[in-house]
Length: 167
Image 1: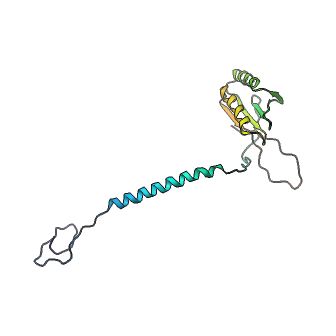
Image 2: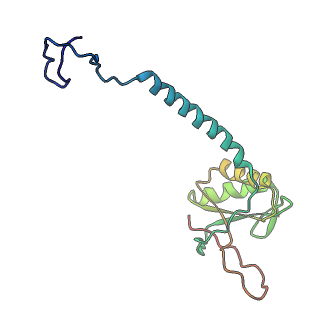
Image 3: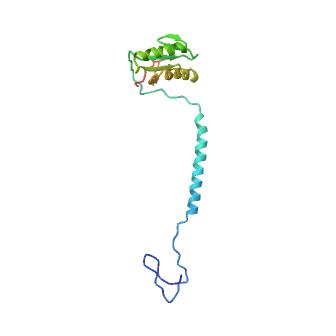
């Protein structure tokens, strides 16, 4: 397009002398922008897939610092020992007996809170079996008992009694 003058909103005026530099309008190139966006998408996808492997590190979980003593007379505390033995009120039970106790307690009070206290060395599978039985019985409130994290004392003393969390 021949003619002088600048761009802008005003229409270009034609002059009798043409400009040696052709007038070009600014354009936004979409294709390189799309390429960059696909590259970023692929990069984030690869990073997120590699982070899934990082979730398998062994770690020591911290003790709960917000637990407070909470005792309710109608609560049910189920203990799981390191060998998988289940106990309620210091009586060793089988899983079938646990089912009958759970159903009996729920018949009396449908809102009975259940606390699961597991030994630190108990296997995850043993605790999971107890949790399956508790959920299968229809218990609505289930919590795990933790030890409160207290600063280490100068003299060795017995471990503090576990404190049930407030539901």
